[in-house]
Amino acid sequence: MGRSQNSFIKNQKVKKRMQKRKEKEEKKKERQENNNKGGELSDMIAYVDEFGNIVDTPPEEETEKKKKE
Image (cartoon, rainbow, N blue to C red; front, side):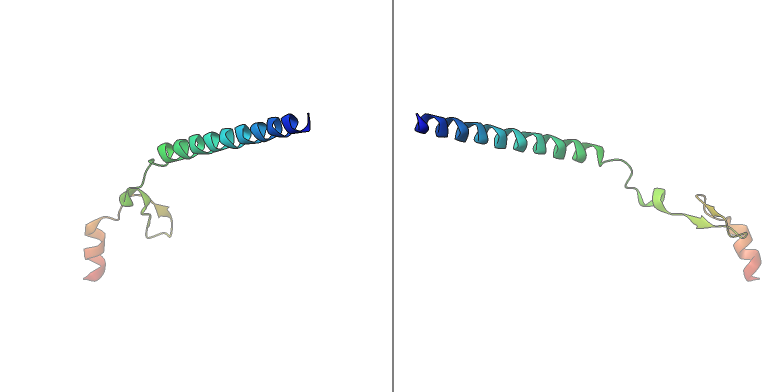
């Protein structure tokens, strides 16, 4: 009687482990699929305008030329 109880418990532990592995792999796949957002370098660049504000558009070329002259 003790022997069958032990084998049953062992089988239950193995099932739990396998289920946890499956769940972990599923979560990993979901993260990989959702991780493809963005990634472009141009999307991550920020510029500072002449007033010190952070903007996402590059400064105008003409204003830089005027400052150098």
